[in-house]
Amino acid sequence: MRSGATALASLLVSRSAFAFHSVLSKRATSRTMTTFAATEASRATLINCPNIALSDGVLHPAIGFGTYKVGFIPASASAAVAGEESEPQRTARECVADALDCGYRFLECAEFYGNEVEVGKAIAESGIKREDLFLCSKVWTTTIEKGPEAIRAQLEKTLSDLGTTYIDLYLIHWPVPGKHVEAYKTLETLKKEGKIKGLGVSNYALEDYLELKESSIEFPPLVNQIEINPFLYRKNTIDAFLKDGVVLQSYRSLRDGKAMDDATLLQIAESHGKTVAQILGRWCVQHGFVYMPKSVKKGRMVENALVFDFELTSEEMEKLDSLTTQENIQKYVDLYRKCVNRDTSKDGSMDGVKMAITED
Image 1 (cartoon, one colour):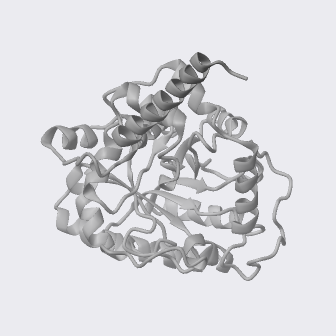
Image 2: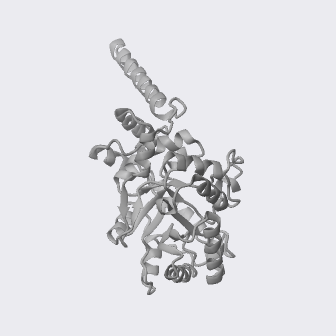
């Protein structure tokens, strides 16, 4: 049985730890505690943000504004299917207008997002010159399955919706089995016509990339857009793409807001006087990934972008790198298997799905 002194010391430590966690929670995770507003300085930082050189020499902004579920929620989005999503309160036109006002100049779009018309309206109303924007879009699985003519028609629709004559980056959204290589070659033809500046892929496992690369393509993918954050840091896959000169665009960089109470993130955020979102963003930028946060709230758009005025230590980076669990890797594998055929005639089946991929 513990002595009274020992018990008292233990109680004090416990209370101190609780108090410390409470302070961290209030300072670092309660995003309503601090209101972030766009200033001339913050706008200038975003407009003149660092760039990442693609393998063709084009400079890709290190940060961009993601438009998924901004003003519109796709019917087959996981949360929508589960009945967990409420109707959007603001239009994509309003949100993107705010993002552009904050200084974002790279917009991440997609056919699947269902809001490119609204994004285009915001661009047109902003008065920003086309050459000052970096626009990326993706062709969806249903269109990929239909073939070349459908892909061409969809690109023309995207260009019209966004109010532009060319797209800076156009990606295959998912590696649809038996279809994605042909689809990529169609994009190569459209690139030669000047409608697309650069080509890329999204959600490609290393094996999908190698299949594509070995299929006599002319223009290797410049980017692969995949989920990357400290809780899904698949280092072997990431290193293989980087070694081959493929830049990685990170989606779910902020873990969809589900990691704001993580103790490691809280402690690091406290030590830098930053929010957890800013620590997650800085981790992404510091690793050299393209960081693509999204929000429908202007204050958070500003907050998410304040990642260029500090650095994480090597020890902090290592701590964050180690947060990935086998459970999260398995969730990724399950999602990959589910989504490569999503919304196609083979939806719900494993027909053609690669069952042996590099998982980590």
